[in-house]
Length: 155
Image (tube, rainbow, N blue to C red):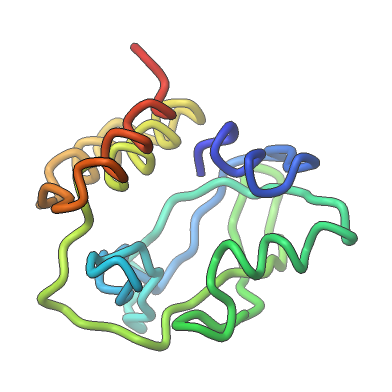
């Protein structure tokens, strides 16, 4: 959701607007190859559950690079979802986790990227607070942690 991080993967990434995915809850249980939990919009079937996020547009030629970076086919599948925005509903492509483990937690730096993206795009304060209060763990690979922490915006 953090624009600068997404543009490292696909330069054409352009934020369009914020939106909500109803009937889903944000979980940090997507099993990552680095041993941590990554984000997933988990279907709950309850309309009161909502995941806030940002719709991005990318050039079609960059889609394979994004698929590789996001792990399509390696723990994520693509799904068309209905996103509610201030301008009506939009059908968008989302990466949905297939390999999950509810005992996993995100690394501190990964959670910080998610929180920074929510701040950047001015998601609702109560949602931002919930993201900040989500448990996270230190990355045992100190070099990887330092490298990612250097990419975080300062504010």
